Image 1 (cartoon, one colour):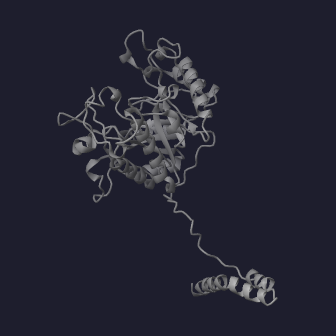
Image 2 (tube, helix red, strand yellow; image 1 turned 180 degrees about the vertical axis):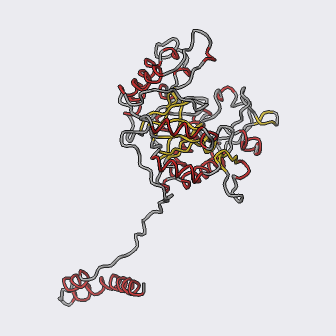
Image 3 (spheres, rainbow, N blue to C red; image 1 turned 90 degrees about the horizontal axis):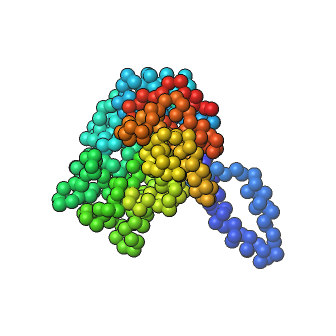
Length: 399
């Protein structure tokens, strides 16, 4: 250590006097450059790189699947319960290779217990009893781990901190399903979710997937009647652009904050957002969000579309709907300077709530139709959604 210090000091001295020495000798007609150059060339100096960045290493070894991610959604209950063994068997016996696991779920709860000193302990549930054991299992089975973090739909935080939410007549506003949202205009809300994402990265997850990165649906119809803070978005733009800017700024900020964790950042987004300039109420601009993430995951479940692409009842036509969406998305992403990976969410559930004649029972054929449609359009990555984690058996996941 002392020798290194001596050499560093010597280098500093030499570099500080070098211009003076050369200048003095040149004024007398003596050229000392070669002599000093030879002296310097005989000594190897090793200095720390002042630009070196900290990169977090969880210690786990996960490799991004060479032929792309093909994953399933897994709740905290499933990840920490008996169903995990069934899901592991499904992945290991098929062409699936990844799991998207709830870390912060739809109500705003963490799905595991952090240390008691953690600011998130009070919002945690013991669904995943041992995160380290879970990650070790996924590492052993080489199943790519993605942490799902639900962002702005957060009833728990909204009720605890109404000032971070939207209120009406002094009460926290909730949608028709009884769900409350927190305010995307507020940086305190951003940091709250980014800190949770950082903890997930430290646990070993290789990707953070942010979901509900938006304002409540239909917000443009109630933005004037609800009470909420605008934060740094008070001036300038109209209400629509305020919302678009807030959502996009959050995505950019989250990506920057997670840069040193050596992980990917992805965002779930409504499929129809890719087909319009921007969704005015919820604040999603597909191109802007896609420009700031590594992966974009459009939720393109056929059941979630009204008549679109000339298809009157989309749930009855999974192949056709998926093809038409993929064509549009390809054009939008092709216009970006650095497009992210496309990894859509597809449907592995039956949407019986649509009513007789408007839905069909989804099974092997319907799931494969969606996968084939994506594949034919050059999209080789996808995620399967089933809220109960009961996935169709016998599917060819890699046609």
